[in-house]
Length: 89
Image (cartoon, rainbow, N blue to C red; front, side, top):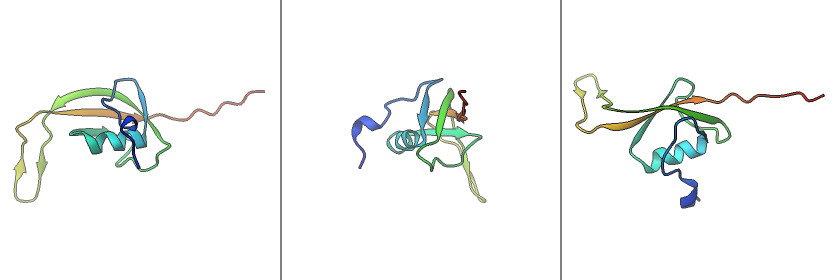
């Protein structure tokens, strides 16, 4: 079960979020997330950083026709944060 305080109200540039937070944000907001590192946000322990937020029109198409929406949407660009392992000796 998800509590209301687990769902981010907004994603902020340069801030890091877990896959779970991103999934919840998508589920409860009309936004698009683009990432070159992920097709879907499955593993909850992976972390992503928001690198850019843009406003635009996301087109969709099928074999027969192309649909251009009339409303601008926020598009969040995210990249996976690499876990750094450090050896302390």
